[in-house]
Image (cartoon, rainbow, N blue to C red; front, top):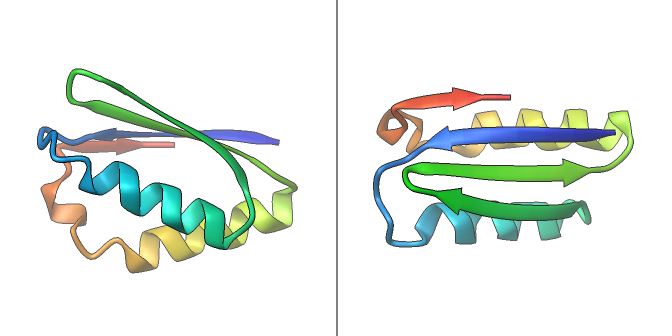
Length: 73
């Protein structure tokens, strides 16, 4: 199963991309991160159980969520 997370994140300092990559690697999830203008898209590919745990962790640990203009899954 593949999920795509779109983060509308205006900062272009690379912090979000690095954090998302680190979390995906920790969960041993195949991933790809793309940026177009202010939209950072994280594609993750894993089984439903692993993706559920990943999404739960991501939502619980992203303390900087208030910096996003928008987030879509």
